[in-house]
Length: 71
Image (cartoon, rainbow, N blue to C red; front, top):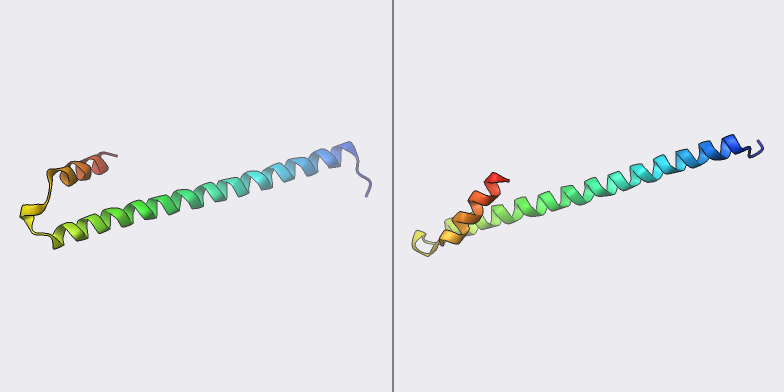
């Protein structure tokens, strides 16, 4: 098959679509990883807070928790 302007254009479009899908896949992967890390941090904070005695828990972590819930 000869490379006609139409086939080259179609090939370019397909390549752009492929690149767009790859970028989207990478962005989704990064977003999932960030969400997982955030959830892990919150879990670790809650776990460590329950291990500490109530006297030593600071109001700062309470404030952070309320901020997380608002988001």
